[in-house]
Image 1 (tube, rainbow, N blue to C red):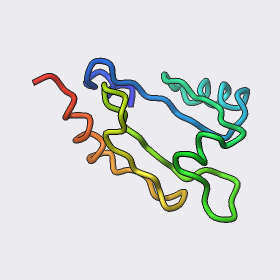
Image 2: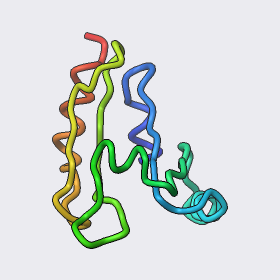
Image 3: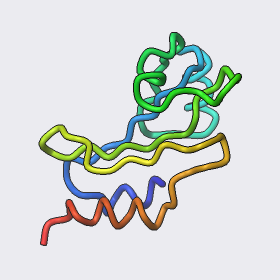
Image 4: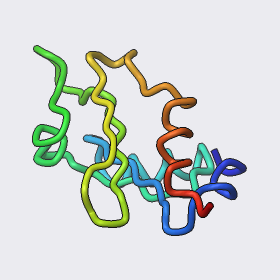
Length: 101
């Protein structure tokens, strides 16, 4: 991911939102050498508003949202379950639309 970020359009960033506690996210970021913010939503306010949780589960479904320069959602993938992740090739195509021509 770090190498791919070099080719992202200017102004594009990555933010991860998790239900984990902030102190756990700091440890995870350090262990995995992540170079983007991990934000805690332990109360599930944003998670439930955007993607929700799997039925009868406490953890969030995976979701990826691309917000355009105008602040509007340009594309989103909300996983049906923990294994349903966005296809990286599709995400690359979405981001390519923001590359300078």
